[in-house]
Image 1 (cartoon, rainbow, N blue to C red):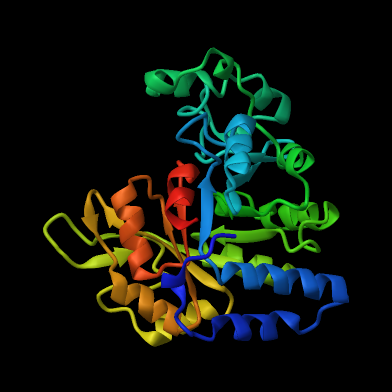
Image 2 (spheres, rainbow, N blue to C red; image 1 turned 180 degrees about the vertical axis):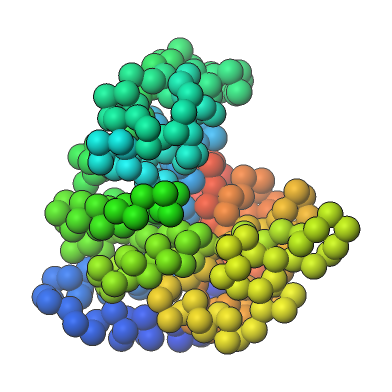
Length: 315
C-alpha cells in the first residue's frame, strides 16, 4: 500500500465498512483478511489500469507482470465470458481494437481467442515502445492471471458488458471463491452497472464493491453534466442522499476526472463523497500534473497506465 499524509481526513468510512462487512462472516480468517484489505484501502491505492498498459499490450501477462514488479497495489482487469464460458481479460465488447480478429468477444470460444494476435496492435500504436516479443501475445484467462500472481496479489476486477451475459457475476464469484481470492481479501469488484454490483453483493456481501460513474455534457450546447447510466445526477446537482444510495452496496465510487479535456469533477465532489463514507478512485490518469492535483484533493486512489509514475509521487 502507499501512504501519503495529505490523505488523512478523519472520516469514518473504514470503521463503518469493517463493521458492516463483519456481519455474517463464517470464519475468523476471512474476517481478518477482509479487515486487513479494508484498512489498506484507507491508504492511497495505485491501481494498474489493465496492467502497466502504457508499456505493454493491455491485459497481457507482460503488462500485468510489469505492474506487479513496479509495486502497484491492485492489478485492474476487465472480465468477460468467452462463448464456452471461460473468464477472460479483455476490455472491448469486440476483439477488433486489441487483436487481429473481428467480432464480438462472446462469439469466440477460448481456443478462438487464444489464436488471435493480441499484441501487434500495441506496436503499431506505440512505435517508441514496440517490442518484437509483443507480436503474438495471447488473450489471458482469469485463471492464468491467478496462477501467475496468486492470492497475495490484489485484483481490481470489472464485470464488463454484464448486461450481455447474465451469468457473468455468478461465474466470476464462483471462480474467485474457488481460487481463494475472496477468503484472502484480495479482490475488489467494480462496474458501471448498479445491477451487476447488486448481483455480486447478493452472492457474497463481503466483497468490496466500487460503483463506476462516467460524467459528460448532456448535449453539445449544454454545460449540464449527466452520468452515463443514470446511477447519480450530474456532479453539480449530486446530493448526500445520492452518495448514500451508492453507499448502501458499495464502499467507493470510481469517476472520470475529465471529458474531452474538460474537468467534470472537483475537490468538492471528492470531499462530499468521502463525507458520505465512500472511497474515491479516479480513472485513468497518466499525466503527472493531474496525478499531483488529485493527490492535493485527497482522493483515495488513481487508475493509471503508468504505475511507476504514480508510485514515485506517493512513496
